[in-house]
Length: 348
Image 1 (cartoon, rainbow, N blue to C red):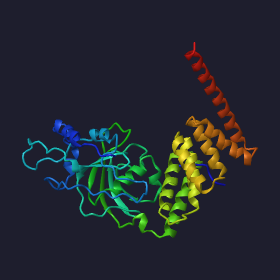
Image 2: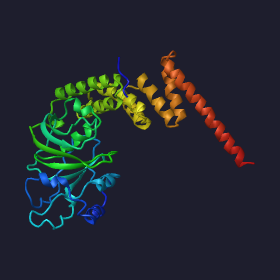
Image 3: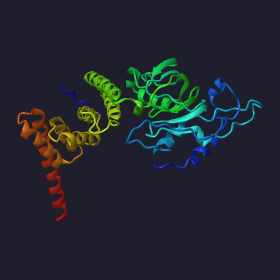
Image 4: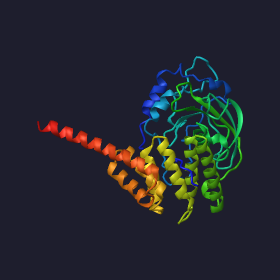
């Protein structure tokens, strides 16, 4: 039985640089003590490698990330000579904005080479300052990109995105969303060669997607809805790159993701996920029901009624659909009453 999981424009960075220059002494960063070589790092723009997601776009400064950037500490580069000399102002090329706006990375020590961790890469990392429950304790640890339970923790996906943007021996500070403390610090000491998802054979992608789906179902059963949604999302990203007609598992994954999204209070996303299911299977009852619930939450009562009636036309004894339709009818009557009351006031 299928489980019901509910899974820029660029901005001007001149203000950021001025903000960093404003209080240079306060912005001296403790990471200068661990830097291996003095001197100014080169200022070439960091190359961004985005995983092959058809819906993904490169965004230099996503909306809202200026607040995260403002929270980062100042440039940690001190002169090797006179201690009284002020550090050079932050270069725009020292900042990297995650395309989805989830965090801002400040490069403290540039790595070398052009290669970055990919799917299957074994990474040796040094971490400090990540919140409790992030899945990344302070100190040295080893992580495998794309695999392992560490990705299911609260900050797992964010940490993986950051590692995907780092070169070997790079050190960086991260300003995390919702974290008011000092920036977390991440250092990538080494990693093994991995592969991009587009380099995988179709059978390998399907096998990895099945693992993600199975893990997502396990997490949903234990009440970890967010973790389940992440698993279903990763599975879908793997399957989206398959040639037409694609994997039939996409239908189940979208339906499961919709269930997660409803529980997470994301009715608009849930409705879209159900649309994907119904494009392939117009009579999918669970997708019709979940889209009806999502439309009701969005206030689209007519659309909600239509979806729920379709469910009951096929399964008249469906108790969940009966109850939800009753709620929609009551909600519609209240809406009509408010409208009538408003009209009466207008014509008095």
